[in-house]
Image (cartoon, rainbow over all chains, first blue to last red; front, side):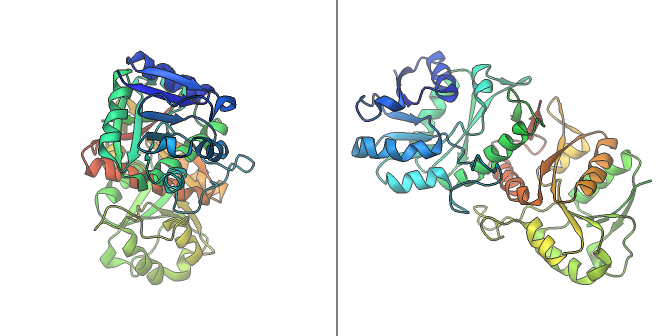
Length: 192
Length: 192
């Protein structure tokens, strides 16, 4: 059975954990307060926290993350202006995390799906699709299999450098929802 | 009646022109060969050409574009590598065009919709949505009205700085279609 540790206990943590549990994955949660003391179970660790909280998690676990599949779900927005990202132009939160964890297999995923669409597993009449970017093909397949077992679609969106585009996509989608041009139960669906 | 000049005669030019004509817009086409000699009719000019062809059009029309609504539809990909854009990191083709045409009202639009979805007006069971970014609210409303009259949806996606995110969105969608992970008649639909 796939084992996943989710760090974080917010809406996205619960939505991702619920989805993976529906697919038979064994899901353990670690609250931000327990970060560093609670053990990391399984091969996959999901950082389901806001981007500014990531660094303290990386510091707390250090080389315990070596070899793990580390899933970055963040949209590193400047939430004061809602007009820019806080990562360097052309880069991504995922690339920054990978540079800090050179021995981990970092994936970008879940940042393009609102929590509500992971819970309902639908965007309108369409199955929700999780877009996954990363440089390790095996890691992407493992996460995609766990996601699909939960009842939504998954697409390999390319190398970790595509995290830049996924974060732009997530940023755009958040600004449209915040401006009430789309709903938090909707957004961008992938249609074949 | 709204009058639009479309520069370009390719798939996207014809798809956009057909959509606007369906909505009662008077559409004139200028081939790249006639650029500079054919007159620009109406308030809206759509640059329906690949990004590398834009500069020669701007040079040919010069101050005839002052005051016009200039619609940039490009996805400025490096088509050799399919792995990056050719505009500076953090910028966009639309921002580059606006800097070269300070007196025009530049909009980014149509770069997130494949030609097929403008012709069918559907992505799967959902109406196609044209995302429009720009700094001139009146210009965005004019284009949105013409697009909606043609039978698809339009959303104001924010200021021209959001063109960066629209181009990332378009880039991602193109890479997924080229990799046969989505179809050219599908893609990202906007669901409410």
